[in-house]
Image 1 (cartoon, rainbow, N blue to C red):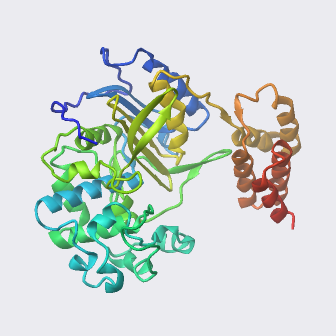
Image 2: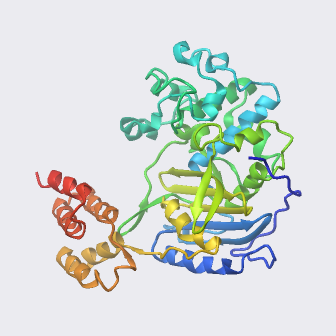
Image 3: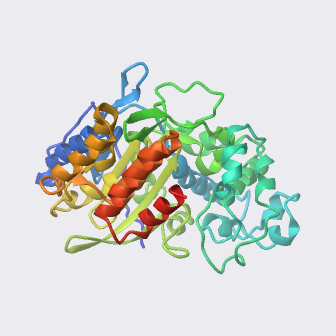
Length: 446
């Protein structure tokens, strides 16, 4: 995939919502606002959505609140933690350090981290880490680690002990598996070759030269202006997200940004602003599977069209993020949310619309609809109401298997197994062939 060579990107001033009149902008993009407002109404979106055609931002709007306790609204200048989109910054930093001769992509881990176990560290290269082909297990896949260690501050090298001696999942370079351990190591290597903390390296090499003034490292000990508070949506509303210390994410997932800065960032990566880098094209091209360096890519079928999409997304307690670049159309779509929504749901709700296809109907989450009645009137009334609307609002509400399981888990976690069981029984009646519901119901009734 060749990198496009474009004119110098000029950032335009943005208001709360900003449209441009341009021949390059599809006539139908204004419908985007209606879909996103519906998603927000159903509590499926609380953040910022940006859409751009080429260098022109045609839509940029904030939804909901940055802080519910103080009733502070989100704005287009609100900063969000971006979780694994951090990996794109770490990958870019790594190739800049390679350009400077501070490291080589075929260096092995122990060339820079001599205390790393040599049995594996002598075989895993920096490029293996970049393209997720190292075979190192992901420390964040350990539930016990998430339950205890994720709450604590760790020294930069302290996380290594949770994955370095666990053995490899496959021989380096022979397979692919997405994880965080490799990108954590890239941050440590960057610190070793520069003698600087990761946050300072990122500022010196990346955010300051690219004028990304609203992008940086979200250290747990720092006060960060305009940073949205993280929440989690449950069937009856929002609650504070669980805490995870920034040192746990480090160079794999500790950064924050705004939608506007991420748009600037996307033009740097995908628009050839820094095309003098001999490694940048490798970063944004397939290396193994549908992955470059910190970035996913591949063809997506959108209606009757096939589009090549380059994307990065992140998910962590309280935050979710999605950056997608549609190469053929030169479209950019950015979604940031501080209630840990599934950005895929938002993405697929509006993707077809951007390509003049019939958009998917936005359905009201059935778990929230039923939970509101359970809380106000009781479980029996909620079940009765469901059967009343099952046919009349079937296409308007999402009563999928996942919605019944989510609602059941909500009450189970609140020590109400009876309600959880009744919800699963209702789900089993609606989805009689679902083994997921049946198995959960059997366990619950033991």
